[in-house]
Length: 118
Image (cartoon, rainbow, N blue to C red; front, side, top):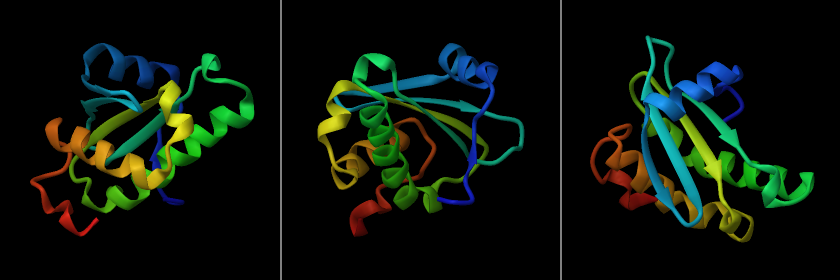
């Protein structure tokens, strides 16, 4: 995931929040919106109500690690925003992979159920 393109600007995040499709679960919220030919880009947010900086950074690392196993299957031009929830702190990245895969499949970012090997 070291070469992944990330969302940086506040307007990019707000575009996903306002115009994107959303899926929620107890451990993760996923927003997805099409972009204009910039590839698959991701953004990760963790609010201060989750805890101190150490806990928020752990949530971001968990989400980033889970996405790295799914990212090769991401095709098309999408902006994806993952929002950490309170239960994200207690999960491992391997627990988050099926949830993330289900969200991205239902939102149309990845195709089919070829994730049986995960």
